[in-house]
Every structure is written in C-alpha cells, then in structure tokens.
Image (cartoon, rainbow, N blue to C red):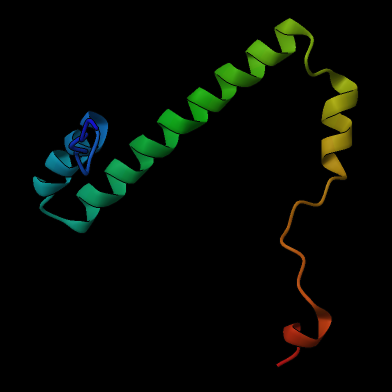
Length: 81
C-alpha cells in the first residue's frame, strides 16, 4: 500500500501566504483584495466569452438568469426573530 504525503497548501496558496506576510498596513490588504477581485472578475469574463462564442449561452440564457433566484431557502419560522 502506497502512502501519499499531502502538502497542506498548493503552490498558489503558498505564494499568497508569502505575499500576505509582507503586508504592512490595512491599505496594503485592501489593495491585495482588489487585485484578487480583478483577477477573478477577469477570469469570469473570459469564461463567459468562451461560453458565448461556443453557443452554450445566448441572449435568452442571460434574460432567464435575470429572473433566477439562487438564494438559500430558509424556513419561515426560523427567519422570524
């Protein structure tokens, strides 16, 4: 039986931890968060463009998403405080 030693963090996570260790202020943290938000927004945009170009989504799909509710359903009795 082969035993696999698993690292707790992947290379990307290690890089982020290293970067965060050098942050010296709240404004540095805010700037890093904004950079990460831009990174993931750009990634989502590229994926949407790919899906559009492949025909997987179209105007009708986008219109249906406007009316889609994906919130976690809560029981009425637990929502009352």
